[in-house]
Length: 149
Image 1 (cartoon, helix red, strand yellow):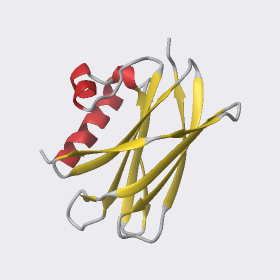
Image 2 (tube, rainbow, N blue to C red; image 1 turned 30 degrees about the vertical axis):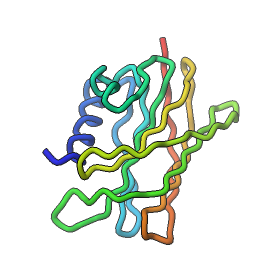
Image 3 (cartoon, rainbow, N blue to C red; image 1 turned 135 degrees about the vertical axis):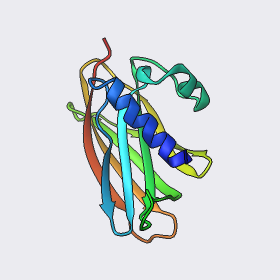
């Protein structure tokens, strides 16, 4: 299985296994690119996956995963490097920047960010991604509820 398909399959599997803890994978197409984004609590990750990618598993930790693909006819898309910035706000308006790190797995490229969460906290994320070689950025906004108990 190709690396990009492996991570998408992993995330899709997590969504099926833990429907209350994670949302379905979301995506937004812009021009010749598509951005995939997902946020979930890190305690739903299998221990071996968390170790492999150096992610702290905890009910009080969240994770965001961003992947940018270039649309190529007849394929699931080509992973591309991107400048990715993520911020989040809770319902009280408290904001935080979420630092992401690039992870490469074979040909797959994805951006992971970790952050603390409180029980029944709703975070509104703003993701800005600019694919390498592109002059344009895309902005995606979405919300995710976290339950830590």
